[in-house]
Length: 363
Image (cartoon, rainbow, N blue to C red; front, side):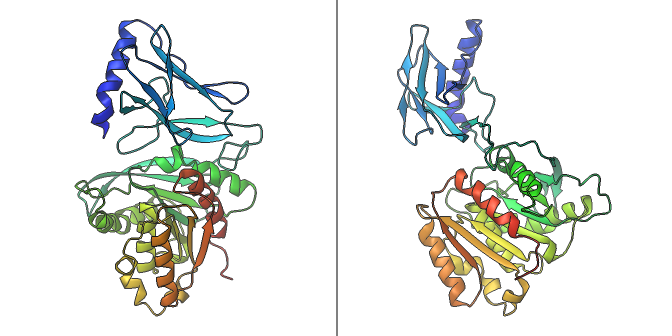
């Protein structure tokens, strides 16, 4: 929780201010892509770097009370990390880049290269990310959603565009797919290379139930579905030039968002003809898509049902059960087992692979 690391972080900032000193430079990317992390706290007993190497890395303190460690060389990419200060997890107070989360506790680092990766900035036409605050009719409160419009949207004023509804995972927010997932840059690059059709991407807040208990997602799913169908889709169709048909809408998400996208999509093929799930959390597949399983026209209504998960993902067994259920009921799907675990490097690649399949003639 935020309250868990806030006292430690406040004490560090107050100490720095009292000393009249600037925070130490952190992270510092060296010429050979080694990275030095620094954290100032003369009173700490131990400080560890968490996240970069999937294990805790011990940091050393100098005479000024600055803890540091250098790791690498590191491959180009996007990383999240934090410091463990006497057992408490804190963000890097010297780094303004923080991963968007419900309870933020990780800082982020991006290492670029002269040959950008598929999710990094390139000198190509870029789209726009719009921030919306809307009143949810079902939840009776204000909510937030992000909408990506592709390059040329504002110039081609007579053109209507298909829409991908893209959901985040547990603990993330409506900002995570852009600020950490780089969904907008992935789409900019795909469109520039002619690999994907221009489309809107809608990224809502997946946490609809404010009283949700850990491990109990059912109430949240029910409330989120009502919000998406009752408020988000109408907002997007009334605010943008969309193709407001099932053939013009796709839906996908990761982990918790994968369950949400599969549930909403399969149960509402009249709204979404292109459906995906990335490393989806599907503990009870029969309950998840009970309505869709009884639809004898489902294969005709869905143009694509795409499911991907990593070989080392802890949710693999549940995903395999879900796939088996689809096969048992004769529901066609595109099942892909990839390398990787339950992490963002996998999900960025899934968006890269999924988007080019959308809104094309059914084979």
